[in-house]
Image 1 (cartoon, helix red, strand yellow):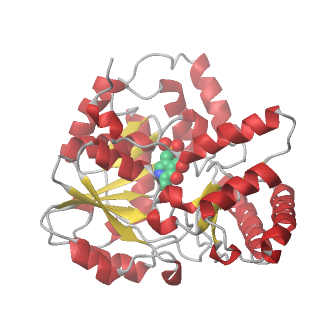
Image 2: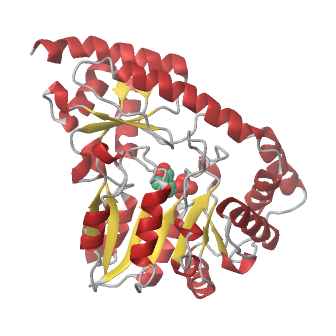
Length: 391
Ligand code: PLP
């Protein structure tokens, strides 16, 4: 039996492959420090777990509305209106099992062969995978270290054309940790305002930032809300990656389309987890502040450590929990180096090139791990560096 033709164009997430390799080494008795997977190592806050347990006892164990629990949709609308400074209502919200399905469903609802989609490069690999799967064409928007991994506005302007149907933004950014400055975001909005394009802004890391101001969202600029899909969820902010719950905020006509795709695939998101989602949004938020303060401490120590490794250069990321180290000074290819760090040093990390061609020469480390493990990882890398520093 032959797979459908589209399967040749669909990609994967390399992080899961590296995780399998790392686990295989551990099964052989090797010690591995996991800096490959992008998920908070913090537990889900207790009051959220308790809300889920209560919901199970109360019988929230059946199908629910396709687009989400009405109370959760209302709570999300309040949260998004408050944090982005715009007016959205429950009718603009689609609750789905994780943030990822918003990518899948909104692209599926909008893209056709011949359409072009501007995607950051390096990028969260699912963007390009989905664009290609649907027969549309990704157009790379390079994010360069010299600009703090923000957008080159001239290149961005030049890449907009008659076929551009969608622009994907992701700030704070995976894999670089870069945050698009407000002025750049405003300039992007000005370039898109009069165009017939839709923006997909992936804001799953919006609460994990280290600046004084929250990262700018493109919806804050005039005329953009009506042509934007915000992708957000619970995975990163509340350490709920395994709960599979996320949401999209979008114009109503698109919510209807996403609802049709949901009813054809999932029917609905799990009912009891959505009750916990209400508790997450409406309950105490101190766990988020505590997590971000701890991540900042780790970021500072880990990046300082990486900068002491011969051949490494690591800018301080403004958000998310990834350090994107430039390793060109080692003289090794980033793919070889990432393999070497895992096989010889037991440090699992990701080759930047797996996030796109502009990630070549970099390695992504997730610092969502204990400070002790991060410092141990730096020591292991320094030991190995003696080899390439001599070469
Ligand atoms: N978007 C980005 C940029 C991510 O890094 C991730 C997860 O790593 C997701 C979306 C997916 O989030 P979820 O696990 O809620 O589907």
